[in-house]
Length: 276
Ligand SMILES: NC(=O)C1=CN([C@@H]2O[C@H](COP(=O)(O)OP(=O)(O)OC[C@H]3O[C@@H](n4cnc5c(N)ncnc54)[C@H](O)[C@@H]3O)[C@@H](O)[C@H]2O)C=CC1
Ligand SMILES: O=C(O)[C@@H]1CCC=N1
Image (cartoon, rainbow, N blue to C red; front, side, top):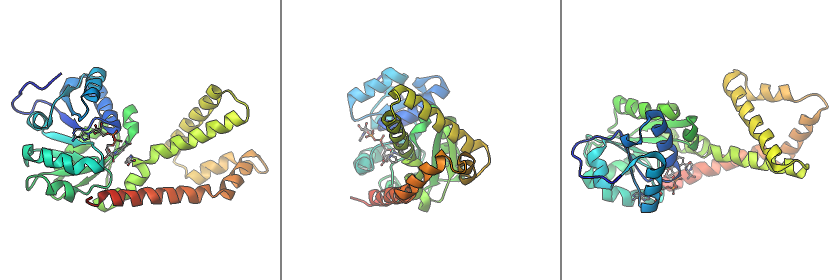
């Protein structure tokens, strides 16, 4: 579906950058809307654009087409590519648009500086579980974004998961926790499946056991109202198997490793925010 010179906004949203997170958000939004034609994608790679159209029925266009056809522009390119994108997009944007950026680390002030004065910008840190409507999207307003703009961004993202608002000063920490967070859980699950293999279980059996255990633990964390410590203690029988494992986790510094890892992600987010 190629843009054919439409006049006036007719698309709900244009996603600029159809990579991993662009696709995760598009997939969830299209599923909820029931019609991909309400969405546009702008992709540097024509092959990737064609793939997304085939998969979700979304329209493809260029930057001028996106700005002409959608009032809400969601920027989902890498932080390293955002300045080039903004320089090319800026001439087509007006203060009537709402620009939503998901680029890790990039402050709203940097986006605003490349756009016409007064353009509302909302910074969002989403995560890939949006793909299964279990995302966590965290919003912050830029200098020209009002409550109404935040409400609009929130309404856009609610169909694909939960939404929270934080002051922008907390966004690098949010990025390190919920933005990158799914990867930490996938890493743990990968290691636990390997342990099952070591113990002689077939890979499919080990994977089934660990994935269902992760799912069950996540639902308990969300729904039981109990602190993680209480939930862990309930599994840890005196003189039993769990405490033998916990002692090894503590001996290998897993708690400290996780804290250091998340601190490193925070630091990287701060670095990505600095103009290159
Ligand atoms: N992957 C994730 O879980 C999350 C990523 N983010 C942020 O989302 C952004 C994208 O990350 P990924 O999707 O992982 O990267 P990616 O590399 O998979 O996707 C970026 C896409 O943007 C396209 N692109 C680059 N410049 C372009 C331009 N000027 N016009 C049109 N398309 C262009 C590339 O072809 C590519 O398909 C980053 O800023 C990242 O910090 C935020 C939250 C979670
Ligand atoms: O790894 C990254 O830089 C992006 C931001 C948060 C998740 N993925």
